[in-house]
Length: 223
DNA sequence: TGTCTGATACACT
DNA sequence: GTGTATCAGACAA
Image (cartoon, rainbow, N blue to C red; front, side, top):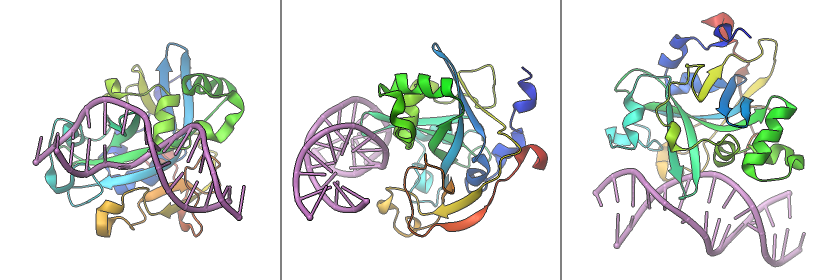
């Protein structure tokens, strides 16, 4: 297999989180585990952009041991623990010292073998389908992602976790909606910074009135 | 179908 | 010491 041609272009990750979030939809998250290499399609993301975003861990320029990875140049993984028991995977975006990140909220296994391995890691029956990875905590458990992977370069196809270009032939509509569970973010809570593939069963939260945002952006041909 | 609640461990002050 | 903001299971209807 020629993995080199599947790499996402480096220039993509220097975009702002708000630009990167919809562009990651349809592309492939790959996790190399002891049980095998798992491939899944990104179907839902959220943008956490800049020090002015009250929903971001880096709001106000907060620079702590946890958030320090957000200040790296785009393309590395930012993984944090929530509720003491779940992890969330983010793709760092933008330039050095500009803390931005895209939260991966939901993925869809590409093939049967991927679904089987993910079900094993989730410790649920394989028949559960979409419940497997329709949320940020679930997908991290299904892909055995924890903070030991924090800071890894997601463009390195020799590593434990990376991104690849998705099927260029896919065609879907992107919807935008407010982000989930950030009521504390005040005026930033209602901004439509969550993006997802319209109609995909793995999307974590269904909106009554989704806002059309665009269609599949073919990164392979655009960059 | 929708709403609610408790579990849990670390970040940060 | 206080805040975090997902998930599974329970319950009502």
